[in-house]
Length: 174
Ligand SMILES: [Mn+2]
Image 1: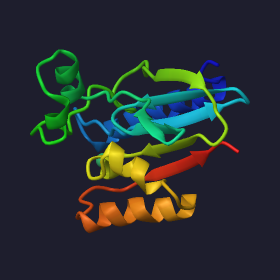
Image 2: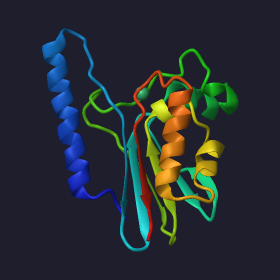
Image 3: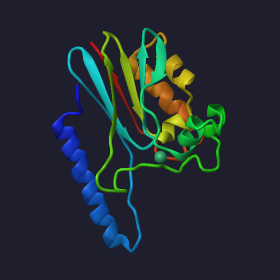
Image 4: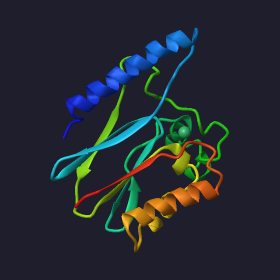
């Protein structure tokens, strides 16, 4: 399932609007943001993203990150120059290689996969994912309601200082 046209053109519009807005903020300014989303039909999901907001899929209790950060540290990890475990604490961990509002045309990455009944998707900004590990996200969903899991994720982020905005969306397949 390709990224549907409406999502694609909305992202293009936001990208162009942010570039226009940045011009009013001064020479050489960029107003950038990240995005992550999920589209689905009855059998497949399509995840799209720009930047370092992430999507995780929990299927049969096992979690995996389905997006791949557009960040300097991810490129270093891919090139074998940095261990994945050290990426989060790297001094340049916040440097993005792509953002909405940075350039035309906007390059959106997508990944598709099968949709299983009772799958859980967690879409989150780095305000959550820098503070709460993949394993901790999976554990939050073990043996409780979705609402309880959401509370646990938020509590973990807040109890660790939450220096950045904490945004996340949980989607389930019923
Ligand atoms: Mn952030």
